Length: 404
Image 1 (cartoon, rainbow, N blue to C red):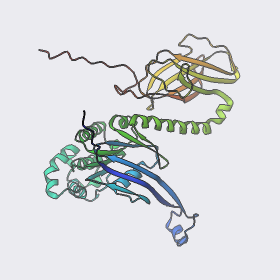
Image 2: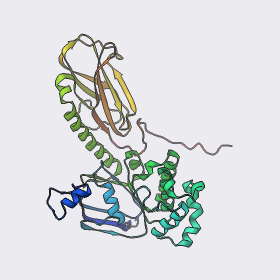
Image 3: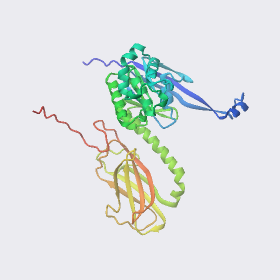
Image 4: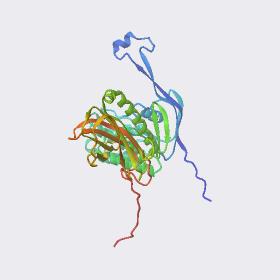
Protein backbone atom coordinates (compact mmCIF):
# COMPACT_ATOMS: atom_id res chain seq x y z
CA UNK A 1 0.00 0.00 0.00
CA UNK A 2 1.44 3.35 -1.06
CA UNK A 3 2.03 5.85 1.74
CA UNK A 4 -0.49 8.69 1.99
CA UNK A 5 0.59 11.87 0.25
CA UNK A 6 1.53 14.58 2.71
CA UNK A 7 0.03 17.90 1.54
CA UNK A 8 2.49 20.71 0.92
CA UNK A 9 2.41 23.49 3.52
CA UNK A 10 0.49 26.64 2.68
CA UNK A 11 2.98 29.46 2.12
CA UNK A 12 0.40 32.20 1.40
CA UNK A 13 -3.17 32.42 2.68
CA UNK A 14 -5.40 35.22 1.42
CA UNK A 15 -8.71 35.31 3.32
CA UNK A 16 -11.60 37.56 2.31
CA UNK A 17 -9.35 40.36 1.06
CA UNK A 18 -10.87 43.51 -0.39
CA UNK A 19 -8.94 46.62 -1.42
CA UNK A 20 -10.48 50.05 -1.88
CA UNK A 21 -8.85 53.07 -3.48
CA UNK A 22 -10.20 56.60 -3.27
CA UNK A 23 -9.88 58.52 -6.52
CA UNK A 24 -9.88 62.29 -6.16
CA UNK A 25 -11.58 64.31 -8.89
CA UNK A 26 -9.93 67.63 -7.96
CA UNK A 27 -6.63 67.13 -9.71
CA UNK A 28 -5.03 70.59 -9.57
CA UNK A 29 -3.65 72.32 -6.46
CA UNK A 30 -6.19 75.11 -6.89
CA UNK A 31 -9.07 72.63 -7.00
CA UNK A 32 -7.80 70.86 -3.87
CA UNK A 33 -7.56 74.14 -1.94
CA UNK A 34 -11.09 75.11 -3.00
CA UNK A 35 -12.51 71.70 -2.03
CA UNK A 36 -10.46 71.41 1.19
CA UNK A 37 -12.62 69.92 3.91
CA UNK A 38 -15.36 68.79 1.55
CA UNK A 39 -15.80 65.04 1.55
CA UNK A 40 -18.80 64.43 -0.68
CA UNK A 41 -18.96 62.09 -3.68
CA UNK A 42 -18.69 65.14 -5.91
CA UNK A 43 -14.95 65.43 -5.26
CA UNK A 44 -13.91 61.83 -4.69
CA UNK A 45 -14.84 58.38 -5.91
CA UNK A 46 -14.30 54.94 -4.41
CA UNK A 47 -12.86 52.15 -6.54
CA UNK A 48 -12.75 48.55 -5.30
CA UNK A 49 -9.76 46.87 -6.94
CA UNK A 50 -10.36 43.60 -5.04
CA UNK A 51 -13.58 42.19 -3.60
CA UNK A 52 -13.59 39.33 -1.09
CA UNK A 53 -10.67 37.42 -2.60
CA UNK A 54 -9.69 34.16 -0.89
CA UNK A 55 -6.94 31.88 -2.17
CA UNK A 56 -4.32 29.58 -0.68
CA UNK A 57 -0.94 28.95 -2.29
CA UNK A 58 0.96 25.79 -1.44
CA UNK A 59 4.74 25.67 -1.24
CA UNK A 60 6.44 24.57 -4.45
CA UNK A 61 3.59 25.61 -6.75
CA UNK A 62 3.63 28.13 -9.60
CA UNK A 63 0.47 30.22 -9.70
CA UNK A 64 -0.56 32.51 -12.55
CA UNK A 65 -2.74 35.57 -11.98
CA UNK A 66 -4.58 36.48 -15.18
CA UNK A 67 -7.30 38.91 -16.21
CA UNK A 68 -7.80 41.97 -18.36
CA UNK A 69 -6.32 45.36 -17.47
CA UNK A 70 -7.91 46.70 -14.28
CA UNK A 71 -9.05 43.29 -13.05
CA UNK A 72 -6.95 43.51 -9.86
CA UNK A 73 -3.99 41.22 -10.69
CA UNK A 74 -1.20 43.62 -9.76
CA UNK A 75 -3.09 44.85 -6.69
CA UNK A 76 -3.45 41.28 -5.43
CA UNK A 77 0.24 40.62 -6.06
CA UNK A 78 1.16 43.73 -4.03
CA UNK A 79 -1.16 42.67 -1.21
CA UNK A 80 0.45 39.21 -1.17
CA UNK A 81 3.89 40.83 -1.09
CA UNK A 82 2.95 43.18 1.75
CA UNK A 83 3.41 46.29 -0.41
CA UNK A 84 -0.26 47.21 0.06
CA UNK A 85 -2.44 46.60 3.11
CA UNK A 86 -5.93 45.23 2.42
CA UNK A 87 -8.95 47.35 3.29
CA UNK A 88 -10.52 44.23 4.80
CA UNK A 89 -9.51 40.61 5.14
CA UNK A 90 -6.16 39.08 6.08
CA UNK A 91 -3.00 37.81 4.38
CA UNK A 92 -0.65 35.31 6.02
CA UNK A 93 2.69 34.47 4.43
CA UNK A 94 5.86 32.64 5.40
CA UNK A 95 9.45 32.51 4.18
CA UNK A 96 11.65 35.01 2.35
CA UNK A 97 9.84 36.97 -0.37
CA UNK A 98 11.42 38.51 -3.47
CA UNK A 99 9.14 40.75 -5.51
CA UNK A 100 9.51 42.17 -9.01
CA UNK A 101 6.44 44.38 -9.06
CA UNK A 102 7.36 47.55 -10.89
CA UNK A 103 10.12 48.68 -13.20
CA UNK A 104 13.01 49.92 -11.07
CA UNK A 105 11.15 49.54 -7.77
CA UNK A 106 13.66 49.57 -4.92
CA UNK A 107 16.33 51.35 -6.98
CA UNK A 108 17.58 54.85 -6.15
CA UNK A 109 18.19 56.76 -9.39
CA UNK A 110 21.21 58.67 -8.08
CA UNK A 111 23.05 55.54 -6.95
CA UNK A 112 25.12 53.35 -9.24
CA UNK A 113 24.10 49.87 -10.27
CA UNK A 114 26.65 48.43 -7.82
CA UNK A 115 25.27 50.50 -4.92
CA UNK A 116 21.71 49.60 -5.84
CA UNK A 117 22.55 45.89 -5.86
CA UNK A 118 23.65 46.13 -2.21
CA UNK A 119 20.68 48.37 -1.32
CA UNK A 120 18.11 46.15 -3.01
CA UNK A 121 19.65 42.93 -1.69
CA UNK A 122 19.55 44.27 1.87
CA UNK A 123 15.86 45.15 1.44
CA UNK A 124 15.28 41.55 0.29
CA UNK A 125 17.02 40.20 3.40
CA UNK A 126 20.65 39.53 2.42
CA UNK A 127 23.56 40.58 4.59
CA UNK A 128 26.41 42.56 3.06
CA UNK A 129 28.65 39.48 3.17
CA UNK A 130 26.03 37.37 1.38
CA UNK A 131 25.62 40.05 -1.28
CA UNK A 132 29.39 40.29 -1.80
CA UNK A 133 29.56 36.50 -2.26
CA UNK A 134 26.83 36.63 -4.94
CA UNK A 135 27.71 39.95 -6.54
CA UNK A 136 29.65 38.51 -9.50
CA UNK A 137 26.83 36.06 -10.26
CA UNK A 138 24.28 38.89 -10.12
CA UNK A 139 26.28 41.02 -12.55
CA UNK A 140 26.93 38.09 -14.90
CA UNK A 141 23.24 37.21 -14.99
CA UNK A 142 22.19 40.80 -15.65
CA UNK A 143 24.66 41.19 -18.51
CA UNK A 144 25.27 44.90 -17.76
CA UNK A 145 28.77 44.62 -16.31
CA UNK A 146 30.04 47.59 -18.37
CA UNK A 147 27.47 49.85 -16.70
CA UNK A 148 27.46 48.51 -13.14
CA UNK A 149 29.21 51.65 -11.84
CA UNK A 150 26.91 54.04 -13.75
CA UNK A 151 24.03 55.82 -12.00
CA UNK A 152 20.86 53.86 -12.74
CA UNK A 153 19.00 57.01 -13.82
CA UNK A 154 20.96 56.64 -17.06
CA UNK A 155 19.84 53.01 -17.53
CA UNK A 156 17.38 51.97 -20.19
CA UNK A 157 14.19 50.21 -19.11
CA UNK A 158 15.71 46.89 -20.20
CA UNK A 159 18.80 47.43 -18.05
CA UNK A 160 16.58 48.21 -15.04
CA UNK A 161 14.74 44.92 -15.50
CA UNK A 162 17.90 42.89 -16.01
CA UNK A 163 19.50 44.14 -12.81
CA UNK A 164 16.32 43.97 -10.71
CA UNK A 165 15.57 40.40 -11.80
CA UNK A 166 19.18 39.34 -11.28
CA UNK A 167 19.14 40.62 -7.69
CA UNK A 168 15.76 39.06 -6.91
CA UNK A 169 16.63 35.56 -8.12
CA UNK A 170 19.96 35.50 -6.29
CA UNK A 171 18.42 36.14 -2.84
CA UNK A 172 17.27 32.50 -2.50
CA UNK A 173 13.59 33.48 -2.08
CA UNK A 174 11.01 30.99 -0.83
CA UNK A 175 8.35 33.01 -2.65
CA UNK A 176 9.02 34.89 -5.90
CA UNK A 177 6.42 37.44 -7.02
CA UNK A 178 6.75 38.55 -10.65
CA UNK A 179 4.62 41.22 -12.33
CA UNK A 180 4.66 41.84 -16.08
CA UNK A 181 8.17 43.39 -15.92
CA UNK A 182 9.74 40.53 -17.92
CA UNK A 183 8.03 41.78 -21.08
CA UNK A 184 10.46 44.73 -21.15
CA UNK A 185 13.65 42.73 -21.72
CA UNK A 186 14.81 41.45 -25.10
CA UNK A 187 13.94 37.94 -26.26
CA UNK A 188 17.25 36.43 -25.17
CA UNK A 189 16.88 37.82 -21.65
CA UNK A 190 13.21 36.76 -21.46
CA UNK A 191 14.31 33.22 -22.30
CA UNK A 192 17.01 33.45 -19.64
CA UNK A 193 14.42 34.55 -17.09
CA UNK A 194 12.06 31.74 -18.06
CA UNK A 195 14.90 29.23 -17.68
CA UNK A 196 15.61 30.64 -14.20
CA UNK A 197 11.95 30.35 -13.26
CA UNK A 198 11.94 26.70 -14.40
CA UNK A 199 15.09 26.13 -12.35
CA UNK A 200 13.27 27.58 -9.32
CA UNK A 201 10.35 25.24 -10.02
CA UNK A 202 12.67 22.23 -10.06
CA UNK A 203 14.06 23.40 -6.69
CA UNK A 204 10.56 23.47 -5.19
CA UNK A 205 10.27 27.23 -4.80
CA UNK A 206 6.91 29.00 -4.92
CA UNK A 207 6.19 31.49 -7.72
CA UNK A 208 3.26 33.84 -8.27
CA UNK A 209 3.29 35.25 -11.78
CA UNK A 210 1.22 38.02 -13.37
CA UNK A 211 1.40 37.85 -17.15
CA UNK A 212 -0.56 38.79 -20.24
CA UNK A 213 1.26 36.03 -22.12
CA UNK A 214 -1.38 33.33 -21.81
CA UNK A 215 0.88 30.81 -23.54
CA UNK A 216 3.51 31.30 -20.82
CA UNK A 217 0.90 30.90 -18.10
CA UNK A 218 -0.37 27.64 -19.60
CA UNK A 219 3.20 26.38 -20.01
CA UNK A 220 4.70 27.43 -16.67
CA UNK A 221 1.88 27.41 -14.12
CA UNK A 222 0.45 24.51 -12.14
CA UNK A 223 -2.64 26.60 -11.45
CA UNK A 224 -4.10 29.92 -12.49
CA UNK A 225 -6.44 32.38 -10.81
CA UNK A 226 -8.65 34.40 -13.16
CA UNK A 227 -9.74 37.81 -11.87
CA UNK A 228 -12.53 39.90 -13.37
CA UNK A 229 -13.49 43.28 -11.90
CA UNK A 230 -11.63 42.46 -8.69
CA UNK A 231 -13.28 39.09 -8.08
CA UNK A 232 -12.03 35.53 -8.52
CA UNK A 233 -14.10 33.96 -11.31
CA UNK A 234 -11.95 30.86 -11.85
CA UNK A 235 -9.30 29.09 -9.77
CA UNK A 236 -7.88 25.84 -11.07
CA UNK A 237 -6.02 24.14 -13.90
CA UNK A 238 -3.99 26.74 -15.86
CA UNK A 239 -5.13 25.76 -19.41
CA UNK A 240 -8.79 25.81 -18.26
CA UNK A 241 -8.28 29.24 -16.68
CA UNK A 242 -6.73 30.53 -19.91
CA UNK A 243 -9.71 29.20 -21.91
CA UNK A 244 -12.14 30.88 -19.48
CA UNK A 245 -10.24 34.17 -19.79
CA UNK A 246 -10.31 34.03 -23.57
CA UNK A 247 -14.09 33.51 -23.38
CA UNK A 248 -14.37 36.69 -21.27
CA UNK A 249 -12.21 38.60 -23.76
CA UNK A 250 -14.36 37.32 -26.63
CA UNK A 251 -17.58 38.42 -24.88
CA UNK A 252 -16.10 41.90 -24.35
CA UNK A 253 -14.94 42.06 -27.97
CA UNK A 254 -18.39 41.07 -29.26
CA UNK A 255 -20.06 43.70 -27.06
CA UNK A 256 -17.63 46.38 -28.29
CA UNK A 257 -18.12 45.30 -31.90
CA UNK A 258 -21.90 45.47 -31.57
CA UNK A 259 -21.70 48.98 -30.16
CA UNK A 260 -19.23 50.10 -32.82
CA UNK A 261 -20.62 48.40 -35.90
CA UNK A 262 -24.39 48.56 -35.49
CA UNK A 263 -24.69 50.91 -38.47
CA UNK A 264 -22.60 48.64 -40.69
CA UNK A 265 -24.67 45.63 -39.66
CA UNK A 266 -27.91 47.42 -40.50
CA UNK A 267 -26.46 48.30 -43.93
CA UNK A 268 -25.82 44.63 -44.62
CA UNK A 269 -22.53 42.93 -45.40
CA UNK A 270 -21.40 40.18 -42.97
CA UNK A 271 -24.30 39.89 -40.55
CA UNK A 272 -23.39 36.83 -38.46
CA UNK A 273 -21.04 33.89 -38.15
CA UNK A 274 -20.69 30.84 -35.92
CA UNK A 275 -18.30 27.90 -35.68
CA UNK A 276 -19.00 24.50 -34.11
CA UNK A 277 -18.40 20.77 -34.58
CA UNK A 278 -20.63 19.49 -37.37
CA UNK A 279 -23.85 18.24 -35.83
CA UNK A 280 -23.30 20.32 -32.69
CA UNK A 281 -24.24 23.85 -31.72
CA UNK A 282 -22.40 27.12 -31.37
CA UNK A 283 -20.23 27.04 -28.25
CA UNK A 284 -19.51 23.30 -28.32
CA UNK A 285 -15.78 22.50 -28.07
CA UNK A 286 -14.10 21.26 -31.24
CA UNK A 287 -12.08 18.10 -30.70
CA UNK A 288 -9.20 17.09 -32.99
CA UNK A 289 -10.57 15.05 -35.88
CA UNK A 290 -14.02 16.65 -35.77
CA UNK A 291 -15.62 18.10 -38.88
CA UNK A 292 -15.98 21.83 -38.25
CA UNK A 293 -18.91 23.83 -39.62
CA UNK A 294 -18.55 27.57 -40.10
CA UNK A 295 -21.91 29.22 -40.81
CA UNK A 296 -21.88 32.71 -42.33
CA UNK A 297 -24.79 35.07 -43.06
CA UNK A 298 -24.13 37.89 -45.54
CA UNK A 299 -26.34 40.47 -47.23
CA UNK A 300 -26.28 43.22 -49.82
CA UNK A 301 -29.05 45.80 -50.19
CA UNK A 302 -28.53 46.62 -53.88
CA UNK A 303 -27.53 43.14 -54.98
CA UNK A 304 -24.35 41.48 -56.24
CA UNK A 305 -24.29 39.46 -59.44
CA UNK A 306 -21.01 37.71 -58.54
CA UNK A 307 -19.44 37.54 -55.11
CA UNK A 308 -16.99 35.62 -52.93
CA UNK A 309 -17.15 34.59 -49.28
CA UNK A 310 -13.83 34.05 -47.49
CA UNK A 311 -12.86 32.73 -44.07
CA UNK A 312 -9.57 32.80 -42.19
CA UNK A 313 -8.88 31.13 -38.85
CA UNK A 314 -6.37 32.80 -36.53
CA UNK A 315 -4.79 32.13 -33.15
CA UNK A 316 -5.33 34.74 -30.36
CA UNK A 317 -2.03 36.38 -31.40
CA UNK A 318 -3.26 36.84 -34.98
CA UNK A 319 -1.28 34.01 -36.60
CA UNK A 320 -3.22 32.65 -39.57
CA UNK A 321 -3.56 28.87 -39.41
CA UNK A 322 -6.19 28.21 -42.09
CA UNK A 323 -8.05 30.07 -44.82
CA UNK A 324 -10.18 29.41 -47.87
CA UNK A 325 -12.75 31.08 -50.14
CA UNK A 326 -15.68 30.02 -52.27
CA UNK A 327 -13.57 30.95 -55.33
CA UNK A 328 -10.74 28.63 -54.24
CA UNK A 329 -13.32 25.87 -53.89
CA UNK A 330 -14.56 26.49 -57.44
CA UNK A 331 -18.01 27.47 -56.24
CA UNK A 332 -19.97 29.97 -58.36
CA UNK A 333 -22.31 31.77 -55.98
CA UNK A 334 -25.81 32.80 -57.15
CA UNK A 335 -26.60 36.55 -57.18
CA UNK A 336 -26.83 38.00 -53.69
CA UNK A 337 -30.04 39.91 -53.00
CA UNK A 338 -30.97 40.55 -49.39
CA UNK A 339 -29.41 38.05 -47.01
CA UNK A 340 -28.09 34.53 -47.53
CA UNK A 341 -26.55 31.96 -45.19
CA UNK A 342 -23.73 29.70 -46.37
CA UNK A 343 -21.67 27.03 -44.64
CA UNK A 344 -18.06 25.92 -44.91
CA UNK A 345 -17.27 22.44 -43.57
CA UNK A 346 -13.68 21.56 -42.69
CA UNK A 347 -13.33 17.79 -42.72
CA UNK A 348 -11.36 16.04 -39.95
CA UNK A 349 -9.76 19.27 -38.73
CA UNK A 350 -6.72 18.72 -36.52
CA UNK A 351 -6.40 21.99 -34.63
CA UNK A 352 -4.15 22.00 -31.58
CA UNK A 353 -5.43 23.00 -28.14
CA UNK A 354 -6.46 26.62 -27.66
CA UNK A 355 -8.89 29.27 -28.81
CA UNK A 356 -9.30 30.15 -32.47
CA UNK A 357 -10.96 33.14 -34.12
CA UNK A 358 -12.73 33.12 -37.49
CA UNK A 359 -12.46 36.19 -39.72
CA UNK A 360 -15.07 36.52 -42.48
CA UNK A 361 -14.95 38.65 -45.64
CA UNK A 362 -17.51 39.47 -48.33
CA UNK A 363 -15.80 40.32 -51.64
CA UNK A 364 -16.78 41.05 -55.20
CA UNK A 365 -15.55 38.67 -57.91
CA UNK A 366 -12.49 40.84 -58.60
CA UNK A 367 -11.37 40.18 -55.01
CA UNK A 368 -12.16 43.65 -53.63
CA UNK A 369 -13.22 43.49 -49.98
CA UNK A 370 -16.73 44.89 -49.54
CA UNK A 371 -16.92 44.13 -45.85
CA UNK A 372 -14.58 42.40 -43.39
CA UNK A 373 -15.69 41.00 -40.04
CA UNK A 374 -12.50 40.32 -38.05
CA UNK A 375 -12.97 37.74 -35.29
CA UNK A 376 -16.59 37.26 -36.32
CA UNK A 377 -16.79 34.13 -34.16
CA UNK A 378 -14.57 31.71 -32.29
CA UNK A 379 -14.24 28.13 -31.08
CA UNK A 380 -12.24 26.27 -28.45
CA UNK A 381 -10.14 23.11 -28.75
CA UNK A 382 -9.69 21.33 -25.38
CA UNK A 383 -6.31 21.16 -23.63
CA UNK A 384 -4.08 18.28 -24.75
CA UNK A 385 -1.46 17.35 -22.16
CA UNK A 386 0.93 15.56 -24.54
CA UNK A 387 1.71 18.51 -26.84
CA UNK A 388 1.25 22.21 -27.55
CA UNK A 389 0.88 24.17 -30.80
CA UNK A 390 -1.67 24.86 -33.50
CA UNK A 391 -1.47 21.38 -35.04
CA UNK A 392 -2.81 18.30 -33.27
CA UNK A 393 -0.85 15.10 -33.67
CA UNK A 394 -0.51 12.12 -31.33
CA UNK A 395 3.18 11.89 -30.38
CA UNK A 396 5.08 8.63 -30.11
CA UNK A 397 8.66 8.11 -28.99
CA UNK A 398 11.18 5.32 -29.52
CA UNK A 399 14.65 4.99 -28.06
CA UNK A 400 16.84 3.35 -30.71
CA UNK A 401 19.70 2.82 -28.31
CA UNK A 402 23.27 4.08 -28.28
CA UNK A 403 25.02 4.70 -31.59
CA UNK A 404 28.69 4.03 -32.28
